[in-house]
Length: 307
Image 1 (tube, rainbow, N blue to C red):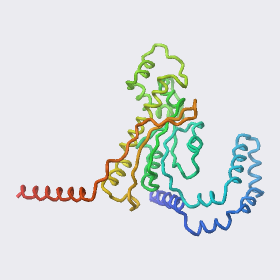
Image 2: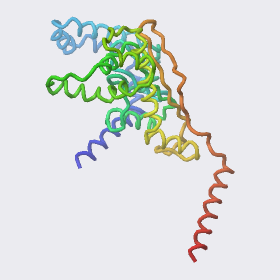
Image 3: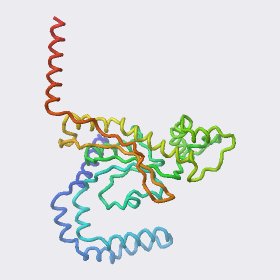
Image 4: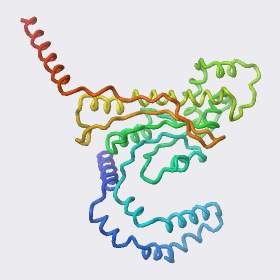
């Protein structure tokens, strides 16, 4: 019962966030001038809470940056935030602090629905990635899923060395359990640069441009693109698109594509790997009717044979 209640609460909240009630939007329109912002900035409670963090200059810098961001927003931008989200893409990226999806693409808010973790992994058994994929595809109707790795990924570097032999405390055990599937990719790779590095007696230091390191980043992206493509969420969306069936929301299923990209810390460029996969061509109305007629004919033949 608790799980059902929590699930209901989650979808109720996300529904409001994606499609706010007109009353909420109208209320905001009365307040979207600078008066509300000035009152919040001058609030004694806000000032007092900020002063509590005065011994943490790094957090003060974040709050200062937020105030610059807030004071720079136009009424149109604020209205757009309350109008709900309809992002065209789901971004599956790495947690690395240097790879902020909106920053590296200059994308405005509302463009990318995002899930990030170490080494940009998709795993159907992990609730974080599976729920993000399901919500992005079935409820936000994204048209693109972009799995994005990056040169210099710490998770990839760690996967290219053996699991520590010594006993680990709980947090480190969880980290290395998470990295073990990546170690399997490294152990089974047939890429010549990865094989050469793996078989070398004295492992050279990994640099950002080491061929084996770069190759592993690319292989990891390709592997996760494949896993996303094989997921039940994507396969179901493609099936609905191909047959013209409506999706979970009762709306036509959009054409969905899965892409693999790599961000290069050395240049700031985002590279498309050319491994995009899309749905099968949708069936025409006549093709669907022919299939239904054939299925009906097959059923009749089966019935006759049984008699």
